Image 1 (cartoon, rainbow, N blue to C red):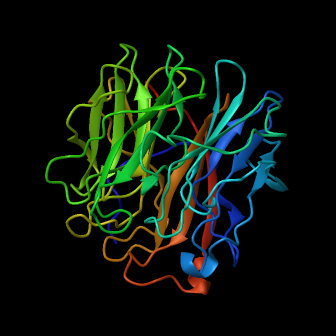
Image 2: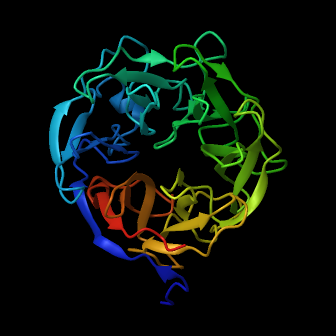
Image 3: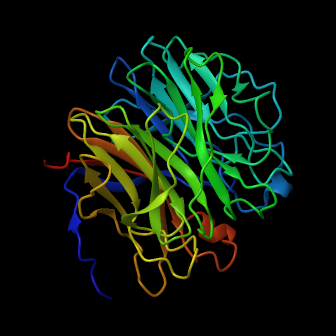
Length: 374
C-alpha cells in the first residue's frame, strides 16, 4: 500500500482511544472546553447505535459528562448533564459546542433529533453560570422565525465575534430534497443580545453541487470578514464569505481542500491563524460521503490560501478500501498544545450497515498536537 505524501503532525501525546464505543452508544460529535481550574469538560451526544433511529426513538437519556484532570490524557465518566428538556426531540445525533462567552457564562449548543424530520430540527441552546454544574432549560434557537424542519449542526460550531455577536452555523435540508445529506443549504443564526433572541441569515449553496453545502463552520478574520467552510458534493470543501457579521453570504465556491462530503472543524489558533481539520482524500465517486480517512489539518492566515495537509490520524487508510472513519474532531487549545478529540469508526464506506460487532471497533480518540510552526 502506498504511503500518504504528507507531513505528519508532531505529538505531545499520541492518538489513542480513550472512550470506547459500547453496545448502546456510539461516540460522535464531542464538544470540549477548559474550566477555570484547568480541568477539561467533554460532552458527546448519543450516536447511531446498532439499530435504526425508529427502533430507539425516545429512549435516549441526557448524556454524561466526561472530565479530565490531566490535560486530556485520561477521561472519567461523570454525572449526566443537569439540563431541563421540555421540548420535542432528543439529543442522539449531531454534535455539541461549548463556548465561554464574553460575559463569563458557558454556552452549550446542540443538534436536536426530531422524529420524521430527516433527522434534524432547529438547534438548542443552554447557558451555565457555574462552569457546567447546572444549566438553563434547553431552548430552541430560531423558533417562531423559521420552520422547524430539517436543520443540522455538528460539533465545535458556536463562535462569538469581536463585537459580541453570536453565530451558530447551520445547514438546512432544501425543501423537496431527500434524506439528510441529500441536498443542503447553509447559513447562520445570529444574536446581538447574548443569545436572548435570534435572527436567521441568508442561506446559500453552491451552484450545481450534488449535495449543496452542509455542516458549516465559521471563523472571524482580523479585518472583520467571516469565513464559512462546509462539506459539499464537489470533491472539495467549499467556502463563503460575509462582510456584515454573518447576516448575508457570498455565493459558495470550491477551496483547494480536497474532501468528500464529510466532516470538518474550523478554529482560530491562539496566534490568530485559521486551522481546519478535515479528511483530505479523493471522493470514491461523485458526491460521495466517503472515504473518511485520513484526518488531517491545514493552516491559513487569510482563509483563502491553505497549507499542505498535515496527517493527524491515518489508521485504517487504504486507497482501495478504508477500514476507519476518523471524523468530527473537537479542538481545545492548551498551553502545551492542541487537544484534539474525534470519533473513530469501522468503515465499510457506506456499502452496508455496520454490524453490532463492527460498531464496537474504535471510539473517542484523543491526541495532543504541537502547535503548527509559522
